[in-house]
Structure formats: C-alpha cells, structure tokens
Image 1 (cartoon, rainbow, N blue to C red):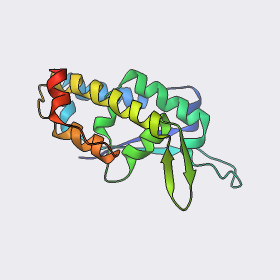
Image 2 (cartoon, rainbow, N blue to C red; image 1 turned 45 degrees about the vertical axis):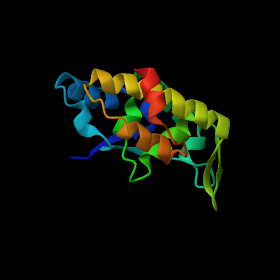
Image 3 (spheres, helix red, strand yellow; image 1 turned 180 degrees about the horizontal axis):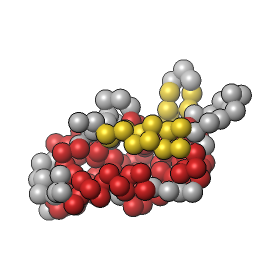
Image 4 (cartoon, rainbow, N blue to C red; image 1 turned 120 degrees about the horizontal axis):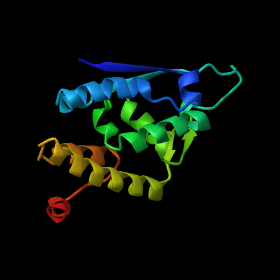
Amino acid sequence: MSVKIHLNSEQIHALDISPVEEKIEDYLEKGRIADYEQKVSFELNYPRDPSDPRELSEIPEIRLWFVRLDARYPWFLYLLDGKTGELYRYIAMLVPHQFNRAEGIQYNPEALEIFAMKKIFVLHNWLKQQNITSTLKLKAIAQSLGFDLDDTLFNLLG
C-alpha cells in the first residue's frame, strides 16, 4: 500500500502542496493516517539543464517547497519510506548539508541535532493525538539520524 506523490516543476515553483494535501487530508478524515507509516515517497519531475551538477536538495525552489510542506504537516516524515532513502532526502531538503559524490550527504551536525529533536517533540505530540503511545518509532527515527534517545526524555515529555 505504498503511496507515490508526483510533483512537477510548476507545482514546485507555485509552492503548491495540494498533491500532498489531497492524499493526507483523506487519510486524516478516515482516521487512517498511521496506516501509512513509511509508505509515502515522492517522484519529482523537475527538468534541469544536463550541465547542472546539483542534487535536487541543492535547488532552492525545491527546498522551499519542502519547507512549506513541513510547515503544513510537521509530522510528515513519519509517513516517509526510510527503506528507499526518502526520509533522508526529505531531511536534506530541510537541514543544511553538503553533498559529496563519494561520501553522500553530510549534514551540518548542529542543524541536524536541532532538527532531530524538534521532530521528536512534534512527533511525540502528534503520535499521542493518534493514540499511539509507543516510543519505538521515535527512537528508530532518532537512531537513523545518529542519535540515541533514552526513555528519560520521553518521561519528561509525559
């Protein structure tokens, strides 16, 4: 039951997040949003000059579209397919980084730490609203970003 969201350059330039809203709002209305954990991915159709060496996450217009999406659905990364690298691409859209062809994405460590903790707090609250009390998913997300979270943190959050 994977979900692929198709985006084109016109939608990106217009900051049009309706392709996501259409799917997400339907899932929310049906109370089935948690069923889509790690099921969502994006297909970006963004034509570039063949001589343009940038990765998609290095193109300001695309990054701005993802910033808008994240502002609308700050818990969206819960839905992203981590197995295909979609989660890491999403994070690259939102966290300052360098891209090295040999080493891949190198996130700014401080920016990544702030981003990760903010997302943990957002997701913790959102999951509680969805009546999901397990912290395993939050720990897994944090661990995939290089952070180990102790249960003490979740006890503080209540």
